[in-house]
Length: 386
Ligand SMILES: NC(=O)c1ccc[n+]([C@@H]2O[C@H](COP(=O)([O-])OP(=O)(O)OC[C@H]3O[C@@H](n4cnc5c(N)ncnc54)[C@H](O)[C@@H]3O)[C@@H](O)[C@H]2O)c1
Ligand SMILES: [Fe+2]
Image (cartoon, rainbow, N blue to C red; front, side, top):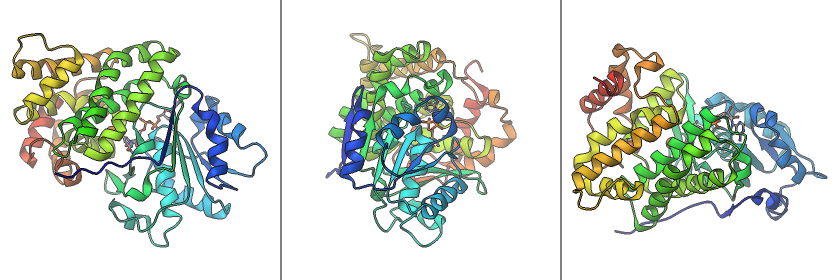
């Protein structure tokens, strides 16, 4: 089987990587870029990291990104880009800012409606030059070919998926994540963990994505509790930033599966943060998947250090899933859907929506039909003790 591996054109990592921003702006010949971010990033003092590099140049700032951005945010960002006559995009922030920027960079080169570009391979040409600077660890959006947007009418999150979205430069400067609030550290960190796990279990996994996925899983399990409990611990932040990047490189090529598919309706209908919805569903989906990927789950157990010598694959797989649960507990993410105000009566419509997300379900180690998805939601709704 032939595998293709794609990523951002250039990736810079390590504390201080942001100091290379100025030379990348010049290399990409951005004469009047638009900086895409949100008010929290400005408040945290991170916007200055970009404006320092832009000193002496003309530029604009779009500050209106919202968490889990809606189509309307991208429309507004395009308007600002066009009205300001900009020629490139610099994104700084979490996945929400990066995805808004990626979608906008492509959309400004397209004359039709934004909705035309939602789906797989529907973006006709490469967008304007794009530099992505993540401040969470994270979505891995700085190296993936996808922008996830909220379709508020359909109450679903939807993906714009195209290689034309791959950033020209990803600058992963871990010190930028020291101000990330603990709840965001937890949610985005578990999102990265799920990227690694789902990429490793994907039917499209390859030797390259496996290497990145397993390294990412190991680093996240070892460093997320520390980054959550001690936000300014730079060593833990650095490990998390690289792990998030690696998980992005893994899932950007192998894809994610049923955890993400079942999470989409939670984001779309109940506005749950992407990482939180993934975290709640993770163990329930893994127990359903286990029969189809017991050996790979056992490898994850080894990586997590919970598979003892002599332990069989099945017990190892169970240990891996329990370790995932413990990690979510350690960073205080609730373990059932009831705690988010979701009613049992909501689950049927959620299962209907999730069962249509074939783009992700087709990567899952086993096919999941609507009824199975409903039963997973019911278990996740009831919680562990039932
Ligand atoms: N494109 C992809 O490959 C991909 C992958 C996974 C998730 N996503 C999407 O990314 C979004 C979630 O991104 P996220 O988890 O990074 O969160 P986010 O971008 O929504 O940020 C959450 C909040 O944290 C704040 N924040 C972020 N970094 C900070 C910092 N260093 N200091 C202070 N505040 C900070 C933001 O301003 C925001 O208010 C969702 O829409 C999700 O669907 C995209
Ligand atoms: Fe994700």
